[in-house]
Image (tube, rainbow, N blue to C red; front, side, top):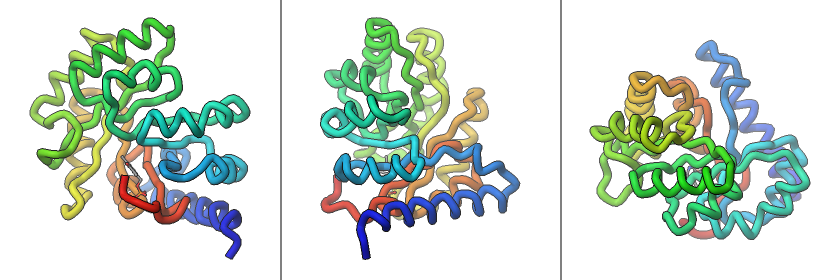
Length: 226
Ligand SMILES: *Cc1c(COP(=O)(O)O)cnc(C)c1O
């Protein structure tokens, strides 16, 4: 099979699944933003997706994105989403390149992002990542601290917080985590939910996802875990 064709076909297939999932729960498919996760894949593959009308892309490393996206971004109206952990020493570069950051999860980072957005006169939409499974090794704010952290991000640091993001534990029912995230968002008056990946985005859509992050279902398997 022609590899170039397959990205276009796979993307069309994912879009059809999004439309079906949205319709089956009475949602407008346009209320779901598909973020094509191009991490580990080259600019050539991203360009094929752009050619097929894809506008939102996700990367999990600032440095990798800097090598891939500036030229494409200058030529096309794409939006870039940072979906991986962000170190404070990369905050400046992240604010300069990305249009949304889905991994805001600690005060030090909030402070740094606020300072950088001010310095660069640039507002980058932020999603607060919540560690809904309370996993030791996983990024994200503890659910118990989420309300206070969200309030501080808005009131103290004046960050443009638009929603919440989660990555459910691998061996647990994702629906429980998606519903939990939706509840935290609701009580904090946040409209957007970044949740759902290749294997569970239909469930996420049923539970209110506004942004789904889909990699392997569009670009194929990644060479190595990242
Ligand atoms: C890699 C990644 C995805 C995409 O995963 P797939 O299973 O390939 O769809 C989504 N979200 C985050 C945070 C990721 O790191």
